[in-house]
Length: 578
Image (cartoon, rainbow, N blue to C red; front, side, top):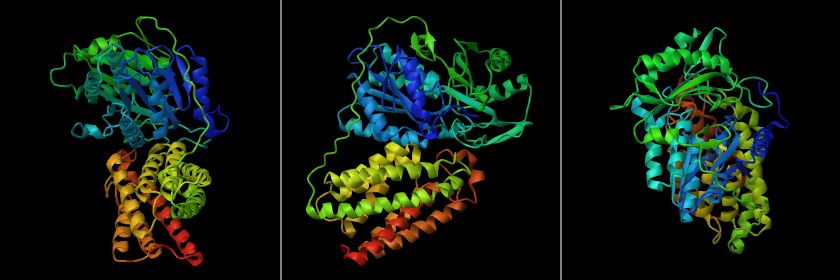
């Protein structure tokens, strides 16, 4: 189990600090991640990678010459926030545009995607690539739904080499997408991993069995089989990957046998003898194969096999020089050290001028945020229990942390004279920045879009509030790609926003319209127990999820009911806008 830590919630930040100190000759520490320490030329494409912590050497270990220009580190198994991604991208940008690389997980898709939109609005050309190599998570006919596992390594290595060679962003993106399309992986586990401070692992495997098709965020495998000798295990890993050989492949492959955290190198070497034998017997030529730990899952016992089908374009990039903490290849041209970036942690809040009515309304918005934080703190354990059925059980913790940070941010915005819309948008940014992960990204998007629609001019009357809820729903579904029926927060959010809009259109006041919408969200959240997930980490474990409601939908309904109570209490104090 994960045994060495101080406060569990500081584990990721402490590990980041230690890494940056040890490898200070390769990286510069920056808030929430690391930047390449060597000078890069103006006009170079910046490769920025990232994801949750707990996977070392991914992602910090791949920052350096010939590979990534920066890595953004979220909390353990949680996506970094939109703000962190955008901030580190600005520091890494050299004028040639940015390629953002990450594994295909809902939280990363949301946060990196939202950061890309912000940066494009600032005039920076940003491309987004989600790695999709895990054959266990979706069939060959649904490759865009596959998770990213150890395939991150060859895809990022090839993209980094292309950027180091001075290629333009269009070409770097094309080659990275080509590498992704020709990369496949499959993993197995003998035991689950234990989060810092947790009493036990996120899942367990019968000692006589092995789990096939695990995820790297503590998700269990899609099926269990009896344990087997190394020769048979090699066949189990190799054969599904050979079945995905691209048309016209020349038989030259990059292969990575990856340990997940607790499997010893000697065990991997034993397995490798059989893996290599099977690959060569299939007519494949191995090009600079790698065996070791490359993308881990804390202390999980197990391994994964990755193949990248090389061609005349990809092979030189796979073999190109690189110098990082975790991967060294060849000898590159020595470069001068870059100056360490200067960062200020001081937060100076400035908001556009707000009307007096909007500032008064901001106080009521803040009252709602305080109530939400209290309700989610009380519900933390229950939300975690629901999430643990087919997820990693951290939803309650994330919602508590995110809502508490949003309430704190709202208080500061209120003191700075923010209007209702700006206060809500700022609270959303704070929620996303602190909670991380999928739920943090979703709530950040929702509250920011809601606040932008409210604005800081007129008082947020019922039609304006209904429009804000609709804008929030549109923001979440556009970037998050979820639709009703996918068993996500959207299953409760959509009927809430639609009911609120309909009730307001009939002339009902805000309190009663919101109460009806909150009830619709509650009914819809409960109904998610009859659904199976079609997105996110729970999708490969659909059968386990059936019969249990979605944690995100349940928490959305709880928030809606909490605000309804705030509105009802406020009505007894002063009349609400129509």
